[in-house]
Length: 359
Ligand code: NAD
Ligand code: UD1
Picture 1 (tube, rainbow, N blue to C red):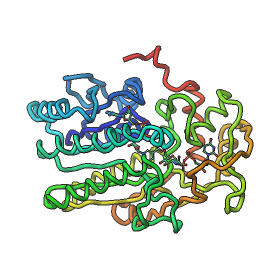
Picture 2 (cartoon, rainbow, N blue to C red):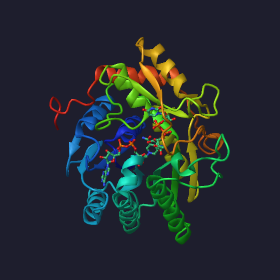
Picture 3 (cartoon, rainbow, N blue to C red):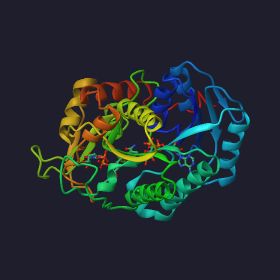
């Protein structure tokens, strides 16, 4: 099986996808600067997949290179070294990027630099080394406040924050690149809805720095009493129980979606595939709280507070195209999401134990 480059492979979605890809027989090189993760996540990936983690110039089934996607020189060296060893990189799954909406409003240039300029550097290195297969982490955030639900891929791209604008800009860049060399590029833009949960072993999961921005990790931290209570942002939305509805997708289903996208890209003619990865099922904030209480046996204290600026009442994917093009759809329920998220949080109440397992 071919060697793949996984940028941002130590992060939340990247680490779970690495397990799935290793299990599917791929050899991986992870490039990560650890700005929002730590090497311990990859040690645990290696443990779950039954392989050795090798750092730096070493080879093996899971190779780690610490570096920045914006570093043209390091990228060129990485591709050249892989080819010289007789293991050329045949494809890239590109997770590396910044993802906090509020931070993107405060520091937009950093977001444009890492997410857009970083992707430009990666694409330039791929092009000059003849690697033309890419799976890109896009986001449902680029639909902004959608006019129709469930949301098909044909819905207007109308982001409402700098983070969303960077994802839309990268999708545009990928279309331009493909238009310039349509016989070469095989690209999938995967628009994730709300990735949550954890590997069922509880060995890898989501470990946000500081106060979580997102519902699920916040809820998990309330459940282990790291935080006193959850604020539910608005109880007067036009939904059946007054709280917002989202499409939560188990991170292992999302990881399987990447494997399926890659397999489709390599087996079909060059193209740009743009697909929603979601379940097609909506759950309200109160439904998530209750499902988590059921899974954990804990009571989640919460209060209803003001609406959060920029939220939409309902975002749910139309996942039909992913089923048609990838034969992929979600397999895991909200109950399994909560069960696995709880196993991870209970076993790792403070996230990864960096002192005990420093690389
Ligand atoms: P994450 O922060 O856990 O993972 C991103 C990884 O990229 C981290 O390991 C980080 O250290 C690394 N990284 C960041 N900047 C880098 C750089 N300049 N060079 C090298 N490595 C760098 O995030 P995640 O939740 O796993 O998200 C992965 C991708 O999916 C991101 O592109 C994100 O925008 C996108 N996405 C995430 C969500 C979500 O809810 N988690 C939703 C939609 C899209
Ligand atoms: C958010 C981002 C989105 C990004 C996604 C994944 C915003 C407006 N949107 O999506 O661009 O792609 O994360 O990183 O930031 N909620 C609470 N209390 C909390 C946290 C959240 O009630 O403490 C509610 C929110 O109002 C929302 C739901 O829970 O209705 C889900 O929120 P969140 O997990 O932050 O995801 P999104 O807002 O859907």
